[in-house]
Structures are given as structure tokens and as C-alpha cells.
Length: 127
Image (cartoon, rainbow, N blue to C red):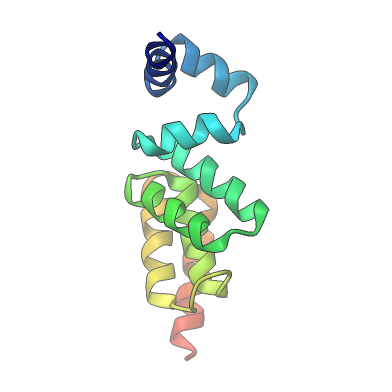
């Protein structure tokens, strides 16, 4: 019976239904909720989990989840990957990758990415 209850809760958390909506609205930074969402491949959960890990100082796991979210089309994660590569914040400096992620974020409607993209391109042309 206990396993069935746990399975039911996990299934509810992974869906896009009312439980999921309620938790995002009232507890958007709940670590366990976002971890379950991340495991189920939800980009928003992956990004929020990465943000939590960043705040905890766990850079290796942070960028693992942030990159997954970015690859799954999450614009905030794409922008953050660009920042990380441009300024070597937890990752090795790589302007080509930074430009790539800024382009992805800008194409997904992230407004700050377009401005940062131009700055990164100028920085690369000066090298």
C-alpha cells in the first residue's frame, strides 16, 4: 500500500494537472518537486533544480541540469549557459558556446539574450 501511495504521488507530480499547477504556483522552488519534474524531463523543473544547485554551490550538478534544460528549449537555461561560458562561471571560458546559447535563448524570445549576444560577438572579434 505504501509503494502505491508513493507511486501515485510521483505520478501526480509528473503530470501537468492540478497538483503540478498548484505546487508551481505556491511552492515554485521546492527542491523535491523540481527534482521529480527534472527526472521526468520537464525543462522548467530542470532549470529550477539547476538554480537551486547553483545557490547551494554544487556547480557540477547545476550545469548538468541547466544544460539539459537548455537542450530541451528552456530559454532561461539557455541564457544562463551563455553567461556561464562567456564569463567562465563554473565552466571553462568558451565564447563560441556562449554565442550559441545566446542565439538559442534569443530565438526563444528571451530579451536579454539578444543584447548579450552582441556583446559576446564583439568580445570574440576583439580576440
